[in-house]
Length: 74
View 1 (spheres, rainbow, N blue to C red):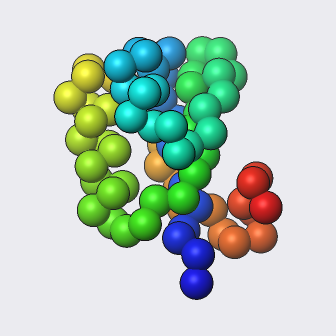
View 2: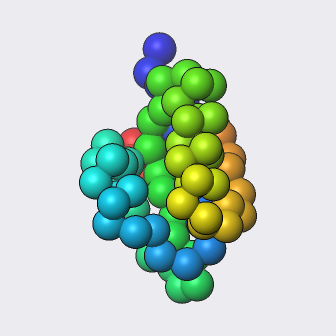
């Protein structure tokens, strides 16, 4: 079973410092938001990503687990 796919929306632009850590996720800018798509292996990875976003002072807008048939990569 593949890892679940998530969509994470953040207000504004994610700094290059964090983008370097997110190389396994697809990043798209849809002004005024940045949208991340990708597989996260477990809940710990999701919480870690949210914590990192919060630690950088970014405004988290939404985190969604996408149904398997809504995966933009597949």
